[in-house]
Length: 151
Image (cartoon, rainbow, N blue to C red; front, top):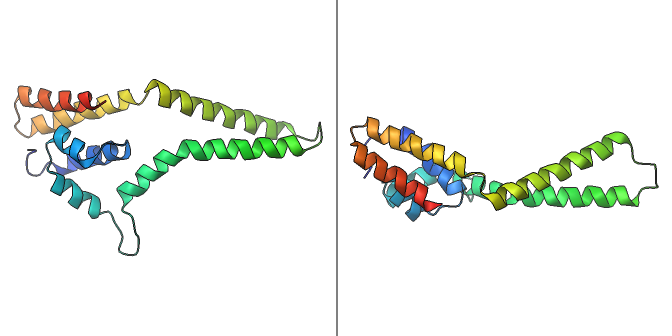
């Protein structure tokens, strides 16, 4: 289990892991924070007037970002194709090129797992934070290895 008072270090990491698609059970195993505690942290971000908490909303935004960019590119390409030849100005073509490049970059990142470095850095920080709370090197290494093993 994580040390009492480690919330300031562990909650942001747990939130990011959840947004990246990890289950609360997987986060529990990786960080050593109980599932009940994670559920409380998650529930505390929910506003009374809203159906979903901030963790769920952020996960949905991340999941749909690439799809929204693809849909936007498709819509803009359709619009450009319907115009008369030569009627498309340079700024529109530049915007289409940049949007297409962004969509390709997102797809490549998804397929190549380029977010691994971000998760590795988070794992190292968690291990450092937990270690500073009096945990041994061996215990900190175990937590780091569990996080890295999730991927």
